Each structure stands twice: as C-alpha cells, then as structure tokens.
Amino acid sequence: MFWPLPMYLPLLVSTVLALVAPWAGRRMPPRTGAWAMAGAAVVAAGTWVTQLAILAFTAVSRFPLVAAHGRWSVGVLAAEDPVSREVAAVCAGVVLTVAVSVSVASWRRGRAMVGAWRECRRLATGGDLAVLDDPVPTAFAVPGRPGRVVVSSGMLRLLDAPERRALLAHERAHLRHRHHLFLLVLHLAAAVTPLLRPVERAGAFAVERWADEEAGAVVADRSLVARAVARAALAAGRARPGALSATAGPVPQRVRALLAPPVPRRRVEVAAFAVLMVVCCASLAVAARDTDRLFDAAGVHAHAAAVHLRTLR
Image (cartoon, rainbow, N blue to C red; front, side, top):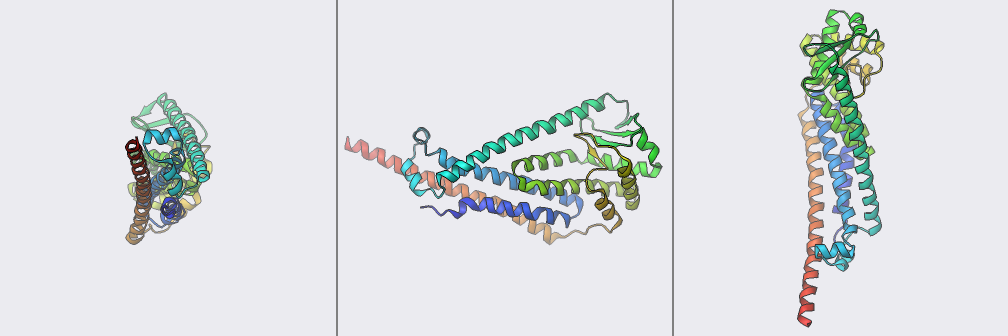
C-alpha cells in the first residue's frame, strides 16, 4: 500500500501558498509584489489543478477499458492506491468544474479587452493618447498594438498640468509593463480556486502601486501622484471593462502608500517566499513520481500475469 500523504501534500502546500501570498505581497516593493503574486497564482493554481487531475485519474484508470489500454492490473491499483474511488470521483468533478470556470473567465475577459480595444481604435489619437469628448472625468489604458491611453475632456479640465502629467505617466506605466497580462493571469488563477481570490486582489493592488511608483519616478514627486490619483478617483466615472484605470483598486490605501516612505527591499522575505513556491512544485513532483510508481507496479503485475497465463497454455 502506497503512503497517502504525498498524494495530498501538493494540495496542502498550494493552500498554504495561497494564504501566505497576499500577506507577503504587501511587505514587498510593488514591482516585486506584482511578480510574486503572479508567480504564486500560477504555481498554486497549476499545482492545485494538476494534483486534482492526478487523483481523478486514479479512478478513471480502474475502468477495465482504460486498464486494458494502459496494460495495468485493476486489482493492484485497487489494492495499492491510497486514494479511494469516492475521493477520486469528487476530484474528477472538481477538475471538470475548473475547466468550465476557466473557459468562461477567459471568454469574458477576452471579450471585454477586445471590445475596449475596438472602441478605442475609433478615437482620434495623438501618438498613444486619445482624448474622449466626455464631461465625465475618466482615464484608462487599453492594451493593444499599439496600446492607448484614453482620457476624457472632463478629466483634463479637472486636473492641472502637473497632475495631468502624473496621471498619464501612471497609465503609460500600465502599457509599458504589460500590466494587463498580470491581471489576466491573476484572474484566471482565481477562476481555478476561490482560495486565490485574495491573491488576485493583492496582485491587482500591487500592479496599481507599481504604476503609481513609476509615475512618481517620472514626475519626481510621489505626493503629486497621490494628489492626482485622489482627485481623479473622487470625480471619475466607472472604469471601462478590460481597461486599466488609475482610479482602480483601494485608492485611499494607494494614496497613503504614496505619502509614506517607499517600501524597502526585504531579500530574506522574498527568498523565503520563493522557497515556498519551490516546495509547492517539489511536492507535486513527489506526488507524480509516486503515482508513476503505482502504475509501474500495476503494469509489472499485469505483465507477469499475462506471461503466467501463456505458460499455462
């Protein structure tokens, strides 16, 4: 009988990673935090769904047709497999649910991004900037080739010249660093398991803080960026779906962070977080190895039984 712990360890470690990631991300500089959140989301979601698929396959593999194709012994699998058929069946159902959830999330996010891109293509532009004739203050960045920063006439009238420069620097930072890809990865990972929704929120906040700090470096005044973001958020309308807006996320927290000293680099914490992600991947590798050994044993038994049957004949 194979030891059951390695089969469930990846689920446990990925859960720990999902719980620790938001806390760790808040203690990192925004750029580092955004990369850490995206990496944690990919590792945790990938580990979670891969291990569920492995557990589900242990049930599917016991069907006679599948066992005959794989040339392994159903009896050995049933006797040695540490995963009950009921648990494996539940895992199979969860994997199917995850597939549907990710497909729906991908379709909705992709449709929103394409819709925003098509809408902005119709606007007159000066370089990467498109001015929308709208009294409602709004500003956002739309990824594409090329990406565009869209700002309304109402927003331009609301802000003074330095604030407009800070706001546009924020939006251009989104385009320059392809922040829409970070948000897409975080959103799809959260569609895999609700445990990653706090990671998605923490990652989205880190992305906005990254753009804030980038804008602060461009205008050489972080307090100016704080003032521009605060004024824009107070007056702005609802952001476009599929776009990245300077007024997104918890604006009061972003303003407080801009008015406070920058978050220092903490190499020890970053290294510890990286080690946790490596442990998550390693636990999945161990589970996959044990599963492979299980099927090898079942295959050897089936081959020995076939040889013995031919000998008797």
